[in-house]
Length: 120
Image 1 (cartoon, rainbow, N blue to C red):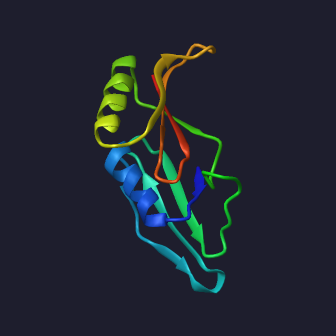
Image 2 (cartoon, helix red, strand yellow; image 1 turned 180 degrees about the vertical axis):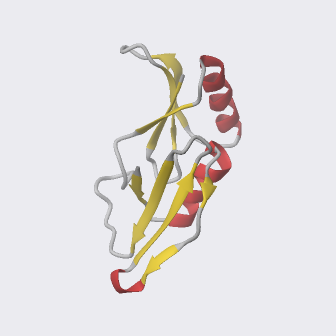
């Protein structure tokens, strides 16, 4: 996965501190005004968080994607994550709940308003 961010380091810190990612080194391409970091999880999932100096918001709110879904393993894990993130000041915008298509999830916002679904 890849995500455009206006504040690269703030977004990376969110995924490291709250969702268990490990951040790789900073890549910089000065000629293109591009910077990125790869975030990795123990199960092999990777997320590239990218920034360009000329990045304009695609819409009000988030610059990156509609949402990404991350499985945390069980309904109990979803409940625990929602509670832990809420206590940490992360905005929980929906759930935990069972969706119309049968998933159990909660939805949180990263620092730039990108929707992150935590699912069982």
